[in-house]
Each structure stands twice: as C-alpha cells, then as structure tokens.
Image (cartoon, rainbow, N blue to C red):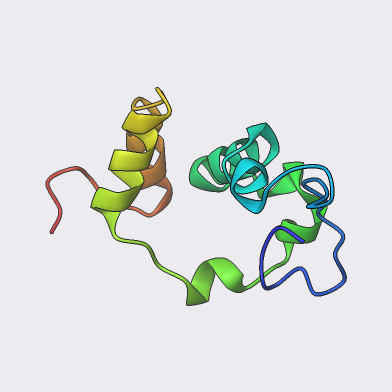
Length: 91
C-alpha cells in the first residue's frame, strides 16, 4: 500500500519482510510515484487517476521544493507550480 487511499493495496512498493519501511518509503518506487504526482502524471498509476486524495492533502510548497532539491530534481518545481496554476512569486 502506497497511501491511505490505496485501501485495496493495489500500489505495491515492496515487502517489509524483505526491506525496512524506511527503505521502501524512500526507495525508487515511492520516489517515482511522488515525481509522477508532482508532474500530474496520474495516468502512470491507474489507482491514482480518479483519486480525490490530491484534493484533500496539500503539502507546503517549500516542502515540495526542498524534496525536489534533495533528490536532484529541482527543475520539476516549476512544473508542479504550473499544474496548480501558480507561479514562484505567488504567496
């Protein structure tokens, strides 16, 4: 289960019998899922395509920016803002 909206456990990220929770949470699959969400590429994760979860959870933009910088993808921040109809100067 990748998120609380995945109640059927359709989005598999691994098995805690084989890896730690932290390794799975920070691993390649979850990183890719996060990047697809930031880009708005929900079609790449069929379970996410029609999910309303994106509407009930909102992260601070600085947290998104910091995460993208941490994983070496800072150029995606502009794509994220554009998807939300915002610019870097918006409060």
